Length: 95
Image 1 (tube, rainbow, N blue to C red):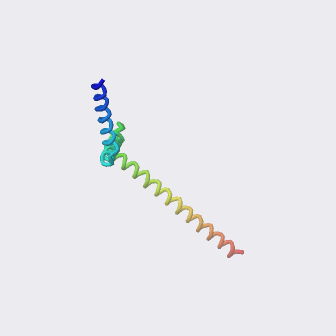
Image 2: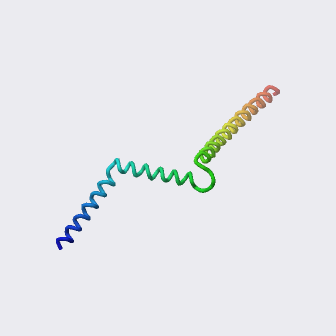
Image 3: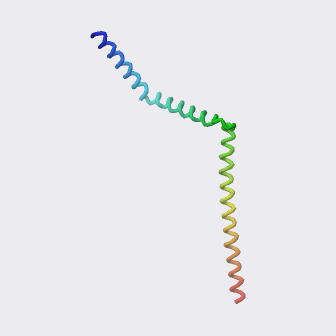
């Protein structure tokens, strides 16, 4: 029985040491960093033939495309608004 008690005590001590190690901020930060790096590596090696640079370029191209499209819509709205104002001024001048 004393051997069983010693074995359980050793197991409990090992479990407590592992818990302390897991919750230590430095170790937790290192574990999170490694998990994030592993996730990023898995994302960049997704198997579709594109590397990280290809994905970055695709996202950047999409963002630039959306900005250009929004700017074009804004310019079109401004030009149409100006054209309608000029047309209404001409009508008023004729009357």
